[in-house]
Length: 63
Image (cartoon, rainbow, N blue to C red):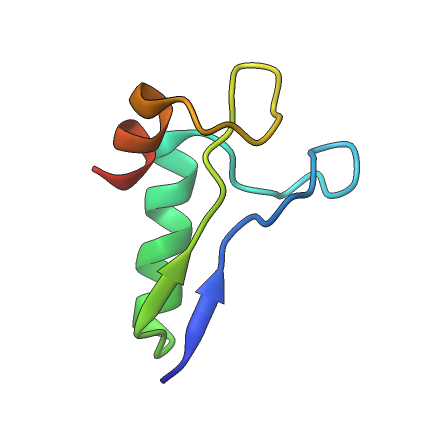
């Protein structure tokens, strides 16, 4: 199994290309699957770009 971690616990300050928004995550996920990824791991972010376990953010990232 090939797994991709789209954004990890990093921030935009650490990597300017880090996908954070729902749309950015969707594009990155599609690219990873096209490259052969079979499993996607991501970290939902709040509006400040910090990892969050807030339910609504998790659903937006997943859907």
